[in-house]
Length: 214
Length: 98
Image (cartoon, rainbow over all chains, first blue to last red; front, side):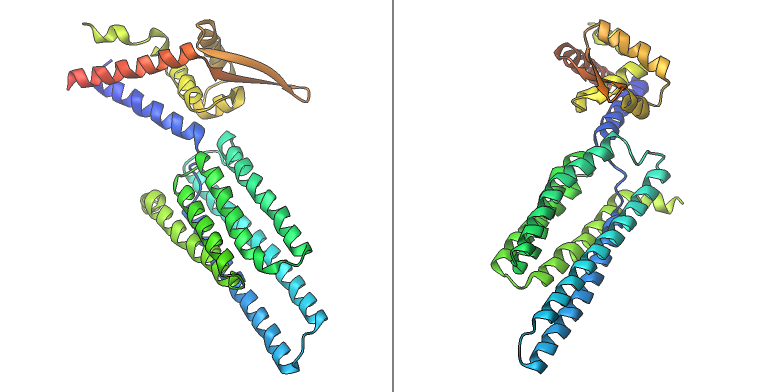
């Protein structure tokens, strides 16, 4: 055994440790995609809410059925945006895993999903409760805080950048609590702009070189 | 002093060293996950795991998921010590050559 072999052994150990404990195939492009979907969704929501208030102003009085319709439309919009975001995000990550010859569903990705889902599902039920009790202004800050906590929780098993994205989402959510009824702007910032910024940073750090090689 | 003397003979095998590397950073790992990470065959991995177990470097937990057996492995205190000693010896050798 010579020096070169020892160095190789050490770097092998490091690689195996990293690969067995962290899911490294998470693609930055998944983040960019999520951000674009988030911004598009927020724009549609903004237009709908805007026209709802316009109708209210023209009529001069509040109308129950209008509000109920707006509410259902927004819930469906949220579900559609979530679905498209997840599908696209999964696609880019699957593509990166395939390119690196790594399995997409292994012990590490399972850990990421489980640790992400625990706070996320908790938040989901919490938000359903808010909707049930008609506390709509609290929905956006709750989304941001629970999503941030979920990211921080899952970051132990994937790229460390996710931890900082999570912390930023939590801070935005807390700020939003003190600026209630500006939820859509905070939501667009947290789920749109932040995803795009972090996605680009992560792509730049981990994937740029790989893409250039083909 | 002969620095090679500090290297652990058991870790001459890449697979055994790989198993220990995985167990150092994961609390409990199943046979299939080890196989996937290290890209080895069942028989090969099993024999190396037995050697490591006989030397007291890892603990075997036999369990069931439904009717299928689910065997998981975790590192022992002795295993952790041996692995760290081996790493230190490797680093020392590289430094002594420099």
